[in-house]
Length: 173
Image 1 (cartoon, rainbow, N blue to C red):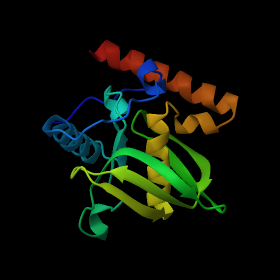
Image 2: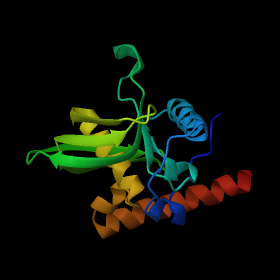
Image 3: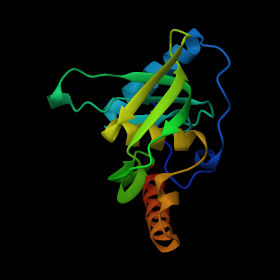
Image 4: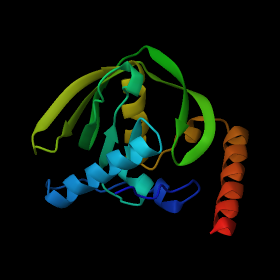
């Protein structure tokens, strides 16, 4: 089921999410809905708070459809255990901040530990767009958006555009 994606500014996007304590069929369904919503948007990552659920859950798939088979990933309670010192700069966007992009510097490689749908602990190292995506989505779980890395003027400008978009969407109703 495709869920509605919250648009910034929304106070739920600024909340620190609660840890997931056990993997249940309901959480499996939530992850499935999140992947469906992400692919439909279309995006390469989605965090639970973006659909109004304050749980530490992210989904991602950085394989573009023409590059090969999809590689959907579901990460409960993801945490970065190591970050490289070298940085990468990507022009980041966000499904909660539609049509707005800005360059953000992040570690070019990260090691992440998480719980999978199987209830087991997993750990992997990510590089390139995967590293950027996983860091961006984990930020969501901590109430942080990519625009929080920007200067105050650029951030205010984007926020004003999103407020205007939300007013227009509300009028269309």
